[in-house]
Image 1: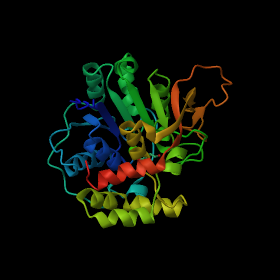
Image 2: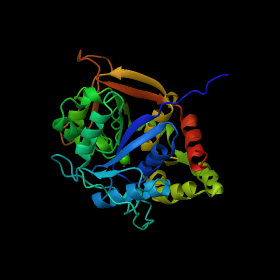
Image 3: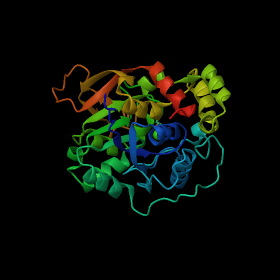
Image 4: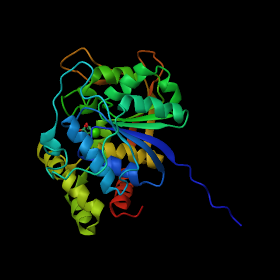
Length: 321
Ligand code: BDR
Ligand code: CA
């Protein structure tokens, strides 16, 4: 008799500045049968820090996992810089101005950076980290434990841009722009690191009005949550970014962990971060031609399968997991 194949789940931490597309990414991590979510860690970024924590806790509750997945508050600001939050993109509460009630589960007393270091020790060689926020928590974790990059199996970052397409300045993507000093530390720390940049998300994670209409027809708890949380960002992307609909960069990143074939072209490149100039603050500088003669430090995603991403998202929102 054929034996049933045992699927080994990916032990994962999601480091997030929970608002908008972060909630969808979290739903993927909370619901996928391929993921064993160990912790959610919160970093300063999208909106007010305490609201980000509440948004993560509420998302855990919506996924039906209240009390199961610890949420650790981390760094409340970037290492050195001041930054601007983006309530105008995701809604003042980061949840499409839904103003949901507080979740029952409360945040953990331990700091996120300590939690990351502890989990990397407990699951040494196995732990995967998805960074879908500015990189402050991960940079400080590298300072706390310089061996962290050797212990973590893989880091996936929604961060930066391959060819300088910015979304917060002409040169920089938001997560790297908020804390370029932290990003420089993380990219140069020696992690086995995969970067999903902004251009790839613009090309492959946009959901247009037709997709919205389809999602609205399902009337599941998760599809309704999705529509409420992302409604402000959906309109912002159409109006300000001249796109067909909202982008889902963080969700695309986690989809590629659940199903690696979502990333269809990945190339190894040396990459570093501009953290001195004001004009190009937070630009990810990818040495495409190898002119710096430096060893590659990043697996850079160049293409993704948008149809596969959408199919996974539809499975999630139809609650087929
Ligand atoms: C990134 O910035 C945030 O606003 C999104 O959540 C995503 O992580 C895109 O640049
Ligand atoms: Ca994010």
